[in-house]
Each structure stands twice: as structure tokens, then as C-alpha cells.
Image 1 (tube, rainbow over the protein chains, first blue to last red):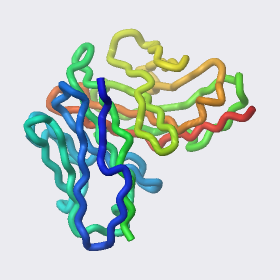
Image 2: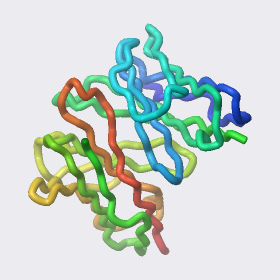
Image 3: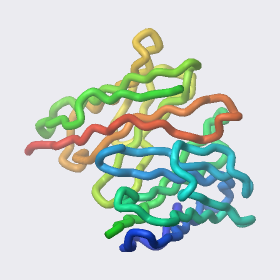
Image 4: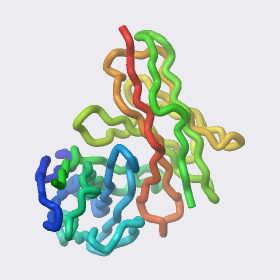
Length: 115
Length: 116
């Protein structure tokens, strides 16, 4: 089974621009979660989509948004980029697991640099 | 609200020595608990998980962790460190209630250095 894929792997943007990141989950997985990883704040949950609906949301400003398509692929968008948005953005997919525990499988991440 | 504390942001061990990474959690209900490993320029890989079955959980690459409810701890151990264990390790919790979805709350991470 192919793993979680994320595109692009690296991205450089300028302050004020917007960016769209893409995530393709493991085949059969309907849940996709996004996380931001920075040296200062660590790993922080952005949001989760399940069957095209946002099921959970972290404490991020409205500039961060996402969506999920009928094939479970997901995109996240960051508008009006700030320097502090520079981070590794990780996508994770999840499907039904043992005893209802939904293990999450992570992609390699998209490294976003805002200049 | 859930939280995770990993004691020690950096740990240095000699090859062949015991690896012990500490994780304490705070949760209003018994959570699911996970350990992930991250190698440079890669995503996170699941090492093991606790779901409320056996309190001693065995994972991949020789790692294991013990859930201790009374201490709200889930420490990760490996009897003998290998050079390939050099990486960053994250402890995480998730709310077992279905309505909470799959949100993971992570600890700050512990970077492991293995000395030859």
C-alpha cells in the first residue's frame, strides 16, 4: 500500500502571499489531519477532515483553512502569509484500526519557508 | 484539555546502553497513548500505541513502553541502543471518545544522540 504523499515537498513564498498544500491519504483512509511543526511551538494540530467535513479544529487563525475532496485527498490553504508561518506542515491519514483506535500515518511533510 | 510532558529535550546514550525516554500525560479521561519517531527531513513513524489492553506495549525496532495509570506515565525504553536510534521521539495522546476524532496532542519531543 502506498503511504501518505504530500506535495510539494519544499516551498518558498513571500509575506502576504497565499499557499496551497496537498495531501493524498493512504487508500481507504477517510480521515486526514494536518499538523504544523516549528522549533518553537513543536507539533500543533491544525484540523481534521473526515468524509469531506471538518471534524476538529485547532487554535489557529482563520488564515489557515482546509478542505477534503470526495476521494479523501485534502488541501490546506494559508492566506496572507506571515514569517511565523514558516514550518514543516505534516499531513496524517487514518482508517479504522484495532479496537477503534485510529492510528495516524504521517506523510513526509511540506517545508514552507516564508521570506 | 489534554497535555503531554516529555522530560528532557535531549538525551545522550552510548551504543548498547539502555534508552529511557519519559512521558507524562494529563487527561480527564483515560486516553490513547502513542510514541512516534522522526528522522531528519522525514515525517513521523508510529513506534507503538497503548489502547487499554496490556499495560506493557511492544513496538517496532525493539522499543517498548509501559502505561502506569497511577503515575500518568508512558515511558519508552529500549534495552540496547543502536546508532540507527538517533532521532527525535514524540509522545502523544488522543481522546478515546469517538466525538473527539483523531486529534493528537504531542509532547515537546526528545532528541536522542547515540555515541559510539
